[in-house]
Length: 166
Image (cartoon, rainbow, N blue to C red; front, side):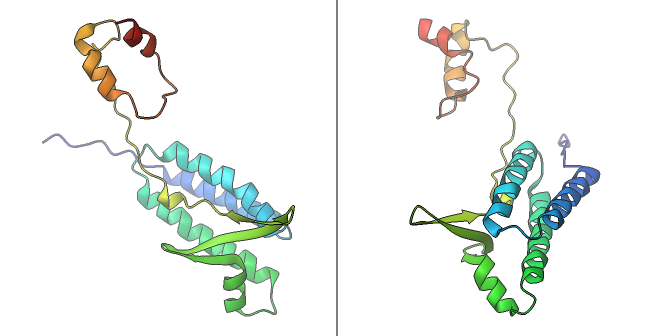
């Protein structure tokens, strides 16, 4: 049995990312919750999309845990005279996986909800290399390339013109 090479996000990158989140939340201590979510979501989504091809599920869980406590302290600090149960009802929704940080705003007489991205639910997708000899111009590999093509329209559709010509 050949041992597998498992690549995880480095500890320094993880701590740097958490430090950036911590600074961002401290810097925006007084903004409305929906604006904070609008700032955090692209950062979380981008970081999760970068590491989703790695062995990162535990890392994602750790980031979610740390982010929960950062946002909990942010919310409690904003409402010192309110109970923690009141803070939970105001800033968190009950979801199947637990509490989800959220906010809402009335836009054009409609309630718009803003939910924080749950990076722990990011699907881990392994990168599968293509066979080195497979080309779209060789009919021998036509079935392999068609099978490999994803169900959705691919961004890398370099072999489609050749498949259409065959």
